[in-house]
Image (cartoon, rainbow, N blue to C red; front, side, top):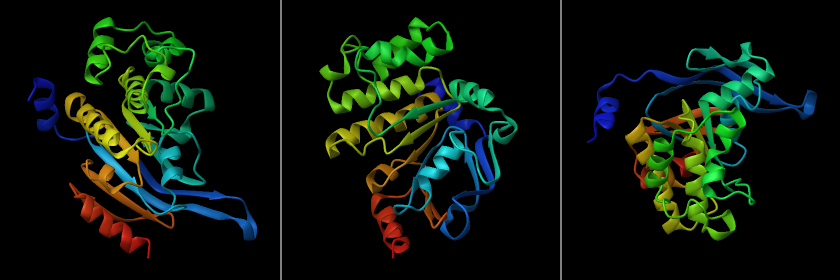
Length: 253
């Protein structure tokens, strides 16, 4: 175990993000849809948390609210010690740029940029100068040291997702949010991506929240939260894929 990993294991866990009485209603009147109906949630630093639920359960809505990409109908989201409802749109943009990294199902890489340029894009947008040592370490960690000058069209799906993960980590965010990060990959490639995401938590203390429909993906998490009808209805700690699958069967009816 490295010194960083040992320190993360021994340090008490602070709260990276929390939600209180969180609701989100879309529409009005008879056609209104309550995507979230009063969610209370604390996610500790240095942990990987998976969010699961049936289609339409509110899991993606919850992720968008935690990231400040949407505003709740009522309730609060707090990232670190900052309550998001107190921020203007421009302040929210700055907070996301500084504190939140994103990994998407379809990679969202710019095709005209090579792997290294895609990874450095968040720093370029923010006007920050990259740390060459950190860039080298990150490419080594994601296993792409020999592929950093290749464009997305020259990379496999798994390699593209590794680039996307490195891009999300480059600014050392407070929290990484992953929306179905293995949903567009085969099972063998998915295993490598999930191992990489868990490794980023163990090696760097990276708080990660992952929405997934795959019990095998959820099984790499420290904690699995299950959402149904806009509420968190169950959670498991250090669960196996079989345990996750059993709970999903129960809440899906």
